[in-house]
Image (tube, rainbow, N blue to C red; front, side):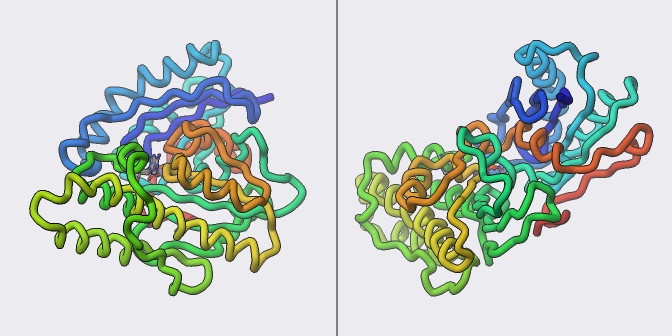
Length: 334
Ligand code: KG4
Ligand code: ZN
């Protein structure tokens, strides 16, 4: 088996993992707490935090895996899409690690990682048949058919027409006075609320497999705006539960449609929103085969980059020194 060191720094989490083939030996993450006060990720701050954190996180990943740096056989790194300053920190670190030992570098697309996270679940997707993949993160929401593990084998069936699911969750959470990222905080607040208290839209009228969350977001804005003075506190838990239920229903409706239209009965999930307890429970009711990875493999992590690297061509040294990062909105998965 090949020992891979994987690095992921596309947004605000500094991540490194060591894998032996597909087996994850360590999955280290340093999350940046500096963005809360701004209600979203500040790119310049994120890049500076990565520079400080990457050394310790890398050392942590090697230590936990009980692997010596000299045993690593290749380095996988997220090349894009994401914040370019953040990506460059990971890419330069990967090159600096790989170059002295002339190791190959595997440039991985961040979305490829989320699309293959299902391989890190206890129940892996079938190898010999196609399966469906739902990726819902802060930057993307898409539904795909995976005919194999390589990016060229993955066909996008639907995508969001406006906001990503995670973006809708973060913006909704903010309207309810919660910090960033909104998902975990919204989930905690929703636990004390009634998901049927408010009938938020689920974009049923958007046909096919595309998603839309802008109507939902606006609906919450109007409800919050029109609440009588001082009433918001008493209604926050119900609003959180109803809003979260609408995001989940919007996602699951498309999954159901995709199962019906393709006849494929196995679904894998990935992306930060796939950490949602409500989403995981709702998918379990579908009765199809499911690959639901542990939460640490849903939100941004380097283990998924190591997995995607196994289905990506490596670039040898010194050619890989010329690799550049690509930003948000660029790359093979749009
Ligand atoms: O995949 P990810 O970590 O980063 C991107 O590539 O965007 O996704 C981050 C998103 C955020 O919007 C965050 O609020 C959401 O995932 N998220 C959740 C949960 N944990 C994180 N959403 C719902 N429920 C959660 N438990
Ligand atoms: Zn992500």
